[in-house]
Length: 342
Image (cartoon, rainbow, N blue to C red):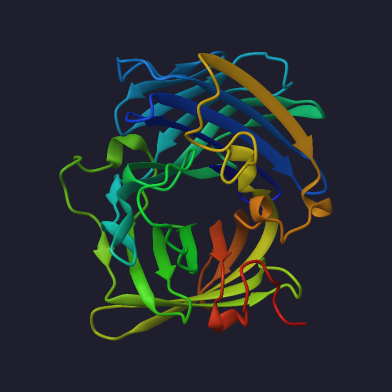
């Protein structure tokens, strides 16, 4: 993702290969305060060559591994295009392995690394265009591996009722370091996955230590608290406690500034869902107003919000990604897609 330091503009992008499904897909989407969200989608048969990172007009170029990458979306019928370069400002920080079960069936077994940095380049869309400069555009690059529940469902044996869960992902940037937290909670708020860390933030790519150096300071655990907009599953405000190995607590408040709908990257999209077979090469796009959507529809509950940060001494900016499906006692959710009590 990429976002301005004042939280007024945002873009997100993704590319994924599903080797057992033979699919390579991608998306690019952007939004600004008070405006529409615009999205490009692409899907193709996955090439045998894994370094072939092209889907029609969209491509990713690795300029320098774990330091600099370029993302290009040439002009196409969606009206969305970009030429962007990501410049790393942290080491690549690996998250712990994330394993989730539904009874005896493993439904997720994955991990990822996250890397924080800055962006430069240009973006255009049906409502205009803007310049991205490293002075004011920050962001996060992540890369995941493993098994996730995407694509067309293939039934194996007896059907299993999905397990309700809450997912939060919080990559946050401060003046001289980053903090990062990941949560998977069960329906009673029980911790299925819980991890938090901090790591130094460098002023240039050249200062980043070697890729094998251990630079993350892992917390003992973390705790989150969320106030929801009544009648929705959207965070109105959030707090995050980072609890270090000595028991010290650092409380971070997060105030949302801008909402990005993750269906703009294919997540839970009814027709452009990730890992779906669309054909040898298929392209698409759409524009919509995030403020006019029904936030309790299944495709609209997965969001990422740009959030302003404070820990009482420092301020920062970051992203809070969230999706809560099913009963979740800490929020008062009792059904699959009901909203927070008023």
